[in-house]
Image 1 (tube, rainbow, N blue to C red):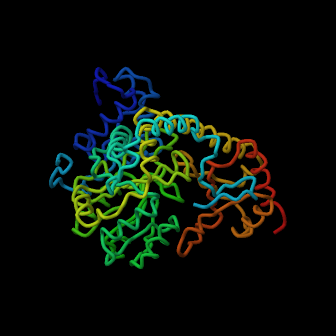
Image 2 (image 1 turned 90 degrees about the horizontal axis):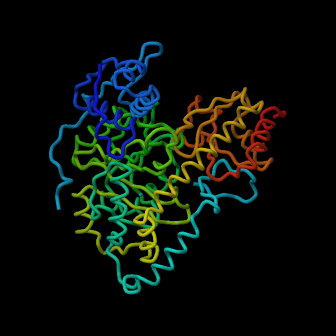
Image 3 (image 1 turned 120 degrees about the vertical axis):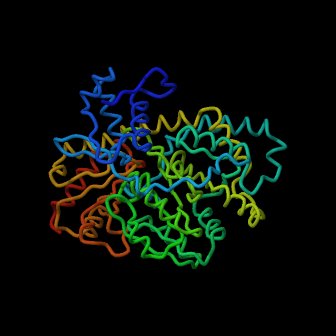
Length: 468
């Protein structure tokens, strides 16, 4: 029977502490692959905690792929030990959508933030204070990577919320992820082959193609990008979103993450670009740890943006380079000026440092949770419910809705447009859509107004029962 002490929890909740203890035993090999974990009830009784605590800890381990469940038998430890990259050196101790259209009353394709959800009063206050307190700094030329104060604030945020131990000097700030992709191509090389996920966010492929580099889509399975197909592609660099893939919503489990790190470690030219675009908005359990946080071989380039967490019109993104690449960037490309103004950087720095960003994320997570629940409840209470299956609804700001219908996707989309609803479907994101992608629609719910949800669901249902 597993036994752990709960005497020194620190800031962790009971379930977080238990989750970390079991995860540590799994990664250390104390709990071996195939081992059966105690039942929730028996472990709760042994540890003196509630079954809810154990259930939530098991749920987080299950989401990250450390364990798997067998119906009516229990939970078992996953096998990923063969994929773990052996540690070579510890470098951490050395001193990177669609536009909304007003003609649609319900836009399920938009990932924008509603204007009323932006913290205008706080932002205005910080802007005024910045103008008063930072006169000389606002007029100074910033380093090419951005103001050191903002980079330090981001490093602190990543340490606290994403488990990443990075130095401010590894962080490079830019006006949007598209700009950062271009810098990475120049840094890594125009002669490299870049792989992207298939299906995937089309703009990423378009950006790589616009730089005239070889870019190849690589097929996915239920665990993320396929390693065998990645090897066949001959790619040097792979661009993935392992914590919440768009559009499928897949979370890459720990076993596949170690396979990816092993793939990258097999050649000096290989790197992984981890696009962590909406990691703050996992609605059940803890956020999935970043791939960068388990990388010990300096192979993961981490990219994130404030477009999802604050607003899509705030073009502030950042990348975290491995130390070796950060040094190379500074030696070869420090002639680039930072593309974000000092004024915005100082305001965002204070927004993070003074705790407003954390409060905003918590408030928005609650808002989106309610928004999602309202939408799902509307579906359950509608005749539409008998025709649909909902998938991947617990992470990020979209889910998949599979519809039982013979009507082609393009006709459903056209009928929805006529009723003032904008939809996209999964098949649109494949280079060559397979049959199983038909009739699966992507439901973004960050921008739709709550008062229109019921009408939108009713109108969607009418699209399916009308004569095509």
